[in-house]
Amino acid sequence: MGSNLSGVTIQEAYNLSHPAFELDPFEDSAIYFGREVLLSKVLDYAKMSKRQQKPLKLVIEGSWGFGKTHTLNHLVVNKYMRELADGVYVFLPDLSGKENPFEGFFYYVLRSLLKSGHLRQFSRAVRDRRDLAEVLKKEAGSFVYSAIYGLTNPELGAMVERWLTGERLLKSELKDSGLSEQMRTEEARELLSSLGQFSLEEKKKMLLLLLDEAHRLQNITKESPKFHEWSTEFKLLLDAHNKLGMVLAMGEREAPVTLLEMPEDRSRLGYRWETMKMLEDQNLEEFLSKLIRYVRDGWDIAKDAPNEPTKLIQDFVKQWNESQSEKTDAKFYPFTERAFRRLVDTLKRAAPRDLCKAIDDVTSLDEVVRRRIILESDVERIIAIVRELDKVRRPLKPGP
Image 1 (tube, rainbow, N blue to C red):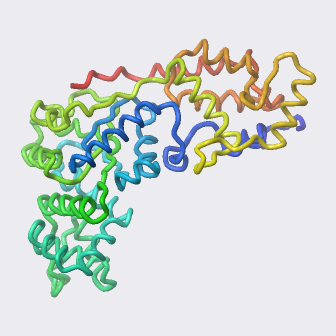
Image 2 (image 1 turned 120 degrees about the horizontal axis):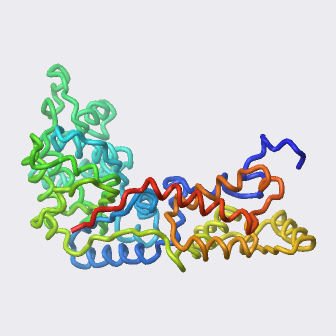
Image 3 (image 1 turned 45 degrees about the vertical axis):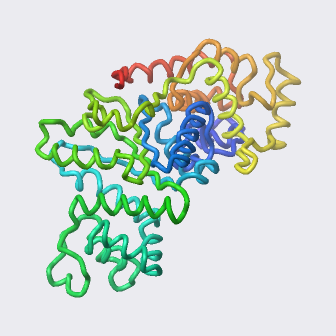
């Protein structure tokens, strides 16, 4: 490999199919391991909701790096969830507490639904079917009806998008559009309810909003100037009569999320409140084993299994074992077996992102790149990095 290693990447050094060990919650969303129990619960909740013809309402909480964003994005593409729901990922903003519900919530939801294509799909159905058009007009009002009808009109589409995301239109633009100057909060909520109803009745599956960073709603308190509006909207959104599904992912928070944790609101969620914890014991070992195979060999999504190791990997393992006492094989490489066992047995618990970052850092060291394998003597460095990263994580305050 030569003495100058500055230009060598992790991917090149260890013949990986993936650039590094840290996973991207968006690009790597098709794979999901280490949290199978949580995934099974969410799928069960979705099945129950479908059988009851009620939308899924669920909170998932956990600290930074525990996999909440990855979980939400996986629910969009998971083949079993796709039979039950159309998932739409929504990233919620930082809130000052002064925003009204449209500015702090509905804007981001509608923007995501425009990006995902669900609103345009609804528009085409409304244009084709008079019965849907009449229901929408009755339930959400004439302005919302005009917006959805006009969304797929090439001449009106751009203006309708601006209206749907809360922009105030000029009076000179409104002629023959059927729109008001600006969309109101209650119109946004009724549109979402109508869209959820359309998905259940016509597509036979839920429309499921996957709301990331929902702990930021903690800034909407009883002292907020628009709290009454927020409280009203969330009561209506969480009610079973609103046919829109919601999964809210919450990280660490310094105060309760009043909109979700007041008794009357908590009762609407029931027991569907799941907590993500650190990976421990068997889950930690399973996560690390599958991480190695995914990053090194790639993954066959159809079979939900890793690809076979490449010949480069097989040849390196063979050559290494012929000359070294600390052995490896296709299950553990780029770890030796002793390194793998030492890491799992000593670390015992870790946040997935912390573990991935620590492995990336150690596999990037010159001496490790030079030998192209992680030895048992390298493991203490990985553990030290994981524990240092864990120091910055505040304990989660107990949920309701």
